[in-house]
Image (cartoon, rainbow, N blue to C red; front, top):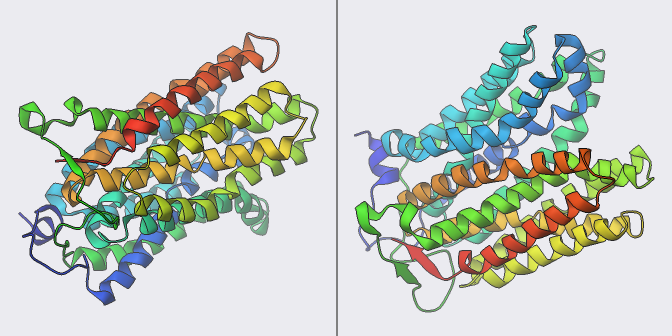
Length: 421
């Protein structure tokens, strides 16, 4: 067993300092979290703005293009499930450092390949690094900042949204700065990924000290603990874990539907392409400030179900507005859907608060995210099929409204003040 494995995976004595990490290393941990979070989406959102150029350059067929756009959810579902085992073997910080390295190499190499199949393979390699880091960041927050789970989750969620929005906005200007070559526009994001490696290597050399029975920064009596289910405490038999999985998967499905279809909905309603793009940007950029605020609030609550349900209601109202008339109040619909997108950092906060310790959070995060992302895959595809086989957006949006109602229902048990032992 490695030193890092002992430091990051083994539960400590209940006696110990309140802080999870010495003051100096806490600063390094903050930088590491922010840099990792900035890299969790550019590998995905940087491709869309230059996808047409990539297809033309690589002579990529429509089916291969569809495969590329479906890789994120598949990688998050499949590869993310391996992250807890890797963290137990090598330590979370070391694994995240390696994941950022893999991401940097994959992004750099895919930008200079001339084979469409190899482009798909290298895209999958890049997103495998993202998937692993995606699962382990909640574990690191629990270990290093046990008294500030909500606030730190909000901080890295805000950085995640900033990275996603920046990649979507800056990839084309970066390509134009290098003579209009899409390869440089995509490859530039490998530099950002490489910058995340050193602070994680530094963290891998230092231990995190958990507090004495302190969970998530909330005040009041200790929360109830879900007893370990049969068969060694398998998460598959824990109702709270399944509620979190349902909530996470449904919010992810909604997010992919917004990313894939919201501009088209507005354009089909008669709005210009520029206006539709601006409305989509509003729905994305709202997540930057709201992620930090909502996660901080959630970290101070013992029950997050009401907050999660309220965010779901905003999403329902936004989709209902689109169903009624996208052009009637498009800015209002975009704002409501932007608020609904904040269910992602809230879900991460709840994962961090439901696990008892870092190892438990890693297992729960892997379970919830792998199955949740798998659950999210059909949603955008069904919306596309319904759109192709119906006259307008009423039928697809009816389907989305039903999904949102289920998400609201899952929010209440997912936000219960329970700890998974």
